[in-house]
Length: 461
Ligand code: ZN
Image 1 (cartoon, rainbow, N blue to C red):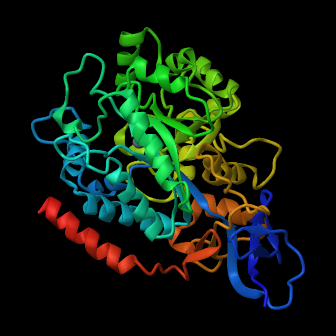
Image 2: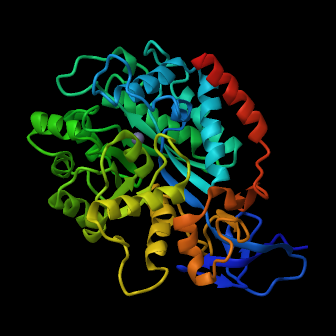
Image 3: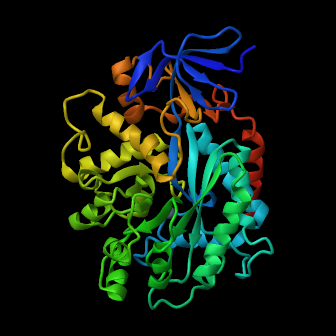
């Protein structure tokens, strides 16, 4: 009896294109083995009518914000033109209200939706740390552990990007609604991160990264300390999302956000700027020169009216682009890819803006798909994103007969998927070689939905 499992889809996506008749060999340790003849005793999983692709990597998420979906789409009475107020109010209200078990419940529902959409890894930008009055929990990372447990319970790989948050902003009075986010100093923040690393290092599917929240919420002294840290832990930060952030940064430092980060020495290849909507050509070059990443979250940037990520300029400058579901306005990473390119078309008044050139039919779709897989994995420091020998077997399949995909040929399938497929076409999802979604079904769906519904009722009725 062999410990090998062989998946036999109709088409398998590897090395930038679909192959008919290729198989995926997975060892007992959940890692991909080189393709070869099927040995005696191997477990063969036939997948007719399905295409198999590397799992999607969600580079930026705030899981609990799933709770505010549908509850912020209006201008609040008495708040004039402040269209952001209803969103921020709903976000703070949810952030203040949740006890640890509810953080678990809210996060699990968001993560379940991700897994069902073919996402196998998430970078969770986690900023809910303390009790409602700001007092740390006895177990200071209690809420981070709840978020990790939620991800692992639905089978999702997680990189817990532990957020450092110091203040409301430059010359902005303290905001009591941010008490759960704030650590008293940078050493306290780093001690929490170290403890988190120690406690999770033997947990499969869990790793940790550093996330100074933004130049608004983190002062120069913190950033200087963080820039001096060595190691290979990913560093993520919200950068240049809204014009107000730029104005405040220039007022405080005399520099734009990316210029400040460059001056402090924070920019390097393990650094990912989340959003980078309002960046100049010079700032794009600063990011590109050190092979830093940018994680675009187009559905959230669109929902919040942030602006359009200049992905064409960033990519030409050598920046590695990845994608995130951020506020969970929608959870569909291929939709993020579609919107990234779509917003550029509306802004530049032309088609196929991110096409790398060369006339290849699948060139643009392959590039966008790379952002949703390989680049996301790289920005989170994960060995996933491609179906290569030695990598964890993280993958998903789609139903080639789904109404949104039927009729695609191997050469049009990827573009059909990236530009037109419904996420309901996703059928099977595996993380570390273990199938967590089978035929579109996840075993925790009913339980998670029931608990989440009860939580939403408590918060909103
Ligand atoms: Zn965010």
